Length: 217
Image (cartoon, rainbow, N blue to C red):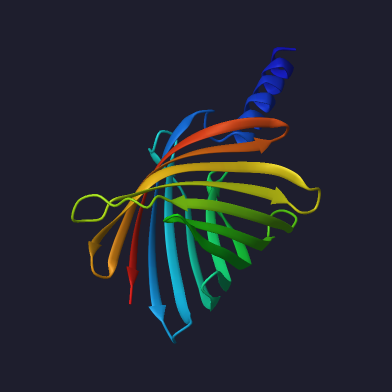
């Protein structure tokens, strides 16, 4: 009887851990590096690499590479096609995900505020679970003010994640940050991100301190 009870307790605990690898309200650190190379007046190649540390920033659990081509259709619209390779820690092992995605970003100015509305459709291919389609919309606003010699510029953004198979909203990211210029071709960002994720009917929050570096030629 004791063995049975112990097995049930272990099963429940393991299930909770697998479903929620980090506690609700976990603090994480994310770092992203971008490179952009113009290949024409209206097109560029974009590369990205990102690292994430969870469990109060003590554990490396996520890494992705992203490469794509962006075409500037006009001053209000960018079109892009990308491929992303993701490695994420699950049950003690890094699992691979292959994620091609297409993007359409609508851009416009409103009294000096720079507004971007990025629409992304991504196909998620796995070897360990069913493939899926997902839509992401990121709405960003850069304020018209710049401070100091490095041109510190505040911004706000919000991104939703929608699973296309069932139309369910499974994630929301709310950003608050600043961008700045380090060198002529090098820019940076520091931001706070509140990520809310739905899994098995339960919402959990993650607090993220993020940094970005972008090198453009």
